[in-house]
Structures are given as structure tokens and as C-alpha cells.
Length: 215
Image 1 (cartoon, rainbow, N blue to C red):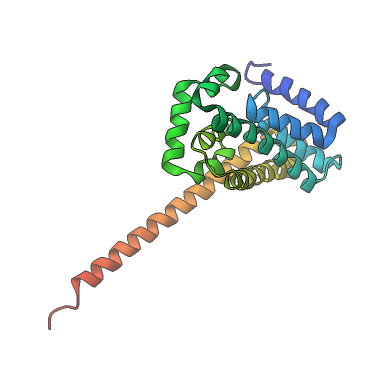
Image 2: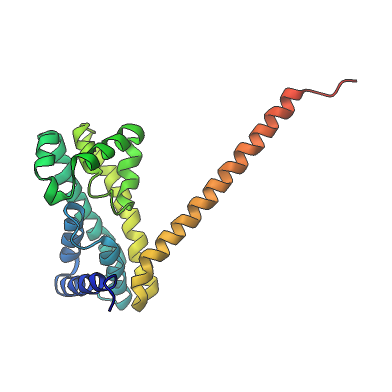
């Protein structure tokens, strides 16, 4: 067994045991912990939950709900840490949370530039979802808005991964790659469509600017 495969095998076995014995509460707890100090990535937890949906051990909607409640609770802890304690408290526990000064500054820059989009879309980025809540708290983002964006982003990502694991069944380990490939295809299509729209508009403006041909 190669070193790259070993961590996945160990982690998946841990998740198997936890979900098999603890059901939805265990699923919520695992994803909560992943958002605080990622011991097991959700790319392992959620497709495996989808596999259990396919087997009938779990149901899809409750699994998505449980896996969304976990990240929301974890995000609120990090949000509160940033809002109530500020940078000094965040950096004091940075080693546990895997957040250093450079990473925190980068997250703050993202939030300053993109605001709501960082909270919403950051839930779908493995290296970002455990830190995006902190700058939202530091910036004193509205609590209701933060909860809504976090819930929407988490639910969308969780539904995709659980659904992919459900569809792939025993091959659930490939769910994360399948979802990422699908998202990449969508992004490429959207980018291509945007380019076409821009080109068409520019040509239309040039045609209007040229005016009618001289008689």
C-alpha cells in the first residue's frame, strides 16, 4: 500500500465505524470537527455517507441536514472566536485550528474583496472552509447573513458529495473526484459562455458605432 493511499484507508475505516454506530449525530460531529481542525476531510466523510444512503442505512435528506448542521456549528464557533476575541485570540489557538498569521491575512484579503461570496463558496474549498468563518467574524458580518450563507454553501456541497457517493455506491471513493470534475466542466462552460457574450456585445457596439454606410 502506497503512502498516498494509507491515510485514506485509515480515515475511511474510522468514519465507517463512527457512522455505522452513531448514525446522523456521528455524521454531524465528524463534519463539525473537520471544519474546526480537519482530522478527516469531508471528501471522505460525505461520499461514505452517500454509500450508506445507497445501502439504506441512512436517508438522503436527513444525511444532508445532519452534515449541514455540523459545519454550521463549527463555523459559528470560528465566527465567534473572530468576532469576540479578535486576531489575538484566533492566533493564540492558530496551531490547533491550522491558522497562522499569513493564512489569516490571506483570508481577510479574500473577505475584503469578495465578501459574501467567500462565505458562500468557501464552504466548497477544502483548504478554505475551516478558516473563512474567522474573517467574517473579525469584520463583524451580520450573524443571520453569515448563518444563511454558510448553510446554503454547506448544504449544496454536502448534497453534491453525498449524492455522488449514493450514485457510485461501492465506488464512493471516486465521488470527490467526480464532483470536482463536474464542477470544473460547469465552470469551463460558464467561462466560455461569458467570453462569447462579451465578444458578441463588443461586435454589436462596434457595428452601432460605425453607423450606416455612406450613400
